[in-house]
Length: 194
Image (cartoon, rainbow, N blue to C red; front, side):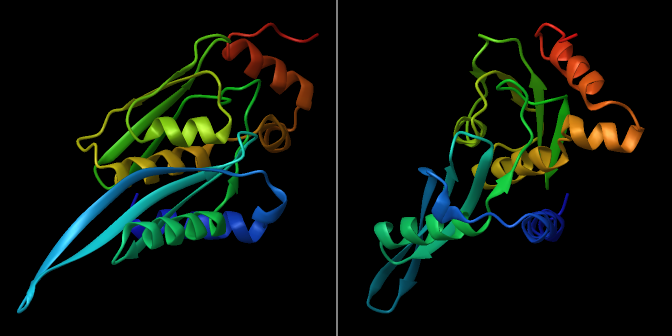
C-alpha cells in the first residue's frame, strides 16, 4: 500500500472515531532516531529524524515522526505527531482477532492470533507497536523485502487497520455477535463460550 493510502486510511479512521489523547494514559516509545548530515560551507550541519509510538496498552496506538536540529525536540515532535494519529484497534482476549497481512511499499508484515501464554512473538519495530497496543499474545513476522523501521511500522498499522471486530463481522454477515465471538475465541486458542 502506498504512502498516501495508509495516511488516508488513518485520517479516515480518526474522522470516524476521534480519540482524545488527553483522557488516555499513554506510554511513549522511541523506535528510531536517524541522524542526517548536510555539508555546508562552514562544516557539517546535523539534523535528527525520530519515529515514535504512543499507546495505552488497552487497544489504542499511534505513530508519529519528528524532525529537528537536536534530538530532544525531534522526540517531542514525534510524540506530538503520534498523539494526533491514535487509532482504536479491535482485540480479543489480548490477541488479534484473525490473520492479517499489512503492507507498505516493500515492507509486508503478518499478524496471527496466538494462544494465551504465547507472548508477543514479533521482531524489530513491530514489537513496540503491538506491546503499546496492549496485545499480550501474537505471532508476527516481517515477510517483506525490507526491515526499514519506518516502512515496517506503517505496514503494521496497515494490518491493524484491516482487523475486523466481531461486531463488524456480525453486522456484515447478519449473524449473532456471540456466535462470531466464540469462533474468534476458538481461533485464538481459547475456549468457546456457549
